[in-house]
Length: 304
Image 1 (cartoon, rainbow, N blue to C red):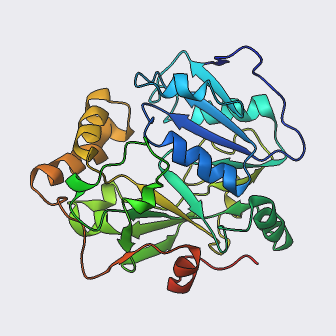
Image 2: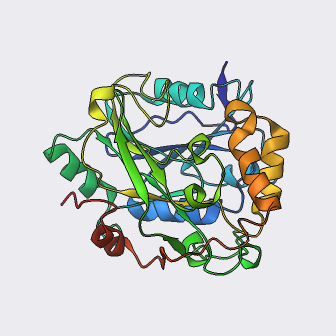
């Protein structure tokens, strides 16, 4: 397995003050404008991307961005161990003993005061507490009306939480395993059959990487494991439910690149076909209002 830069001039070394973000893409063009804008606003200075053979213009658009280093690979996502080998390769190229962000294109980090507090402030607060892996569970967001009416195509500067503007305020379960924390709950837990096959919400999107194998095992339990049990200081707003969800799910199944034969997406397609995902609202739904709301609801603690 190898990755290679897709633009002359990459690979550019990171500076000591850079905050790099690792992400993988495959036909994610609708998320790119808001994704890049959100993380630039938080203080990310470099984006390190492996594009998995996108055909919708994702790759071409990323190559126009001066702060994005774009790589291709001789293997697909599944062959790269769910992308973990790509992440490991990026760390080998750009170096250890520094903080990295590691998220997907449909995940937007939120923490106390993130509207004005930048990542260097959060990192300083985490270091002062001795926290080197920052857990942040995914919160599935969905539109307040029917999914089919929620169009998000990235053609404007609208952020995804302005379209998929609701989430479940309660109904989550947090567990501790020997290697990490794990969390379940949210609308998929309410509506899908066998949610345990799909519903792993805990991630560690911001972490100090000292070893090249930090991401090798799983993005849900980075190594070393003993750093995975700090208080939760953020959440990832997660966006899977828009008008094009059914089309996306069918393509994910056909592509065959995801965990256990795209089992999670097959479960979603069954629910879509049965009409279970037409409208995700319930008596636990609330509309997203910002980081203070999530802090007050107990989704995370303040690091400050």
